[in-house]
Image (cartoon, rainbow, N blue to C red):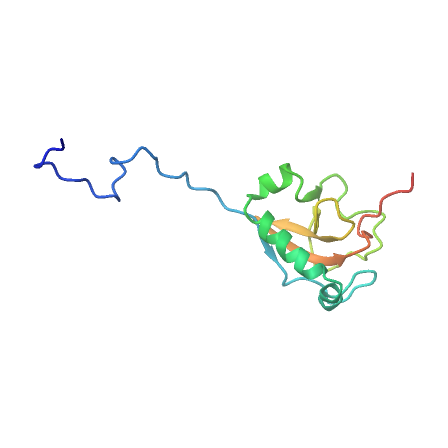
Length: 143
């Protein structure tokens, strides 16, 4: 039998349940499209990517990756940072003079896809510069 005189504790008070408060997650990575170069050979425009169905894949990939912190995205391989050489030496893209990034990065639009976006990371923001459907930003050497 329940005690008639006891009051029920309001649901918003943690003492009632066994669940603890969720830990506050740190900053997650965000993406910026403000520096995407409109059309730089051999890259493509966002319109070309849209026509080929790649823009929606990029959007979904950005939504997925943005649940992680920058460090987590790098550790789990969602984003690859080129730390040893700066700008890729064999890149078919000309390095933009107005961008002072020392460390460049790429993100595949699907797991292990040929299509990538290339840019740099600063303060947990991935600034996308190039849309590269042929992986020419850092071409793979022939084996």
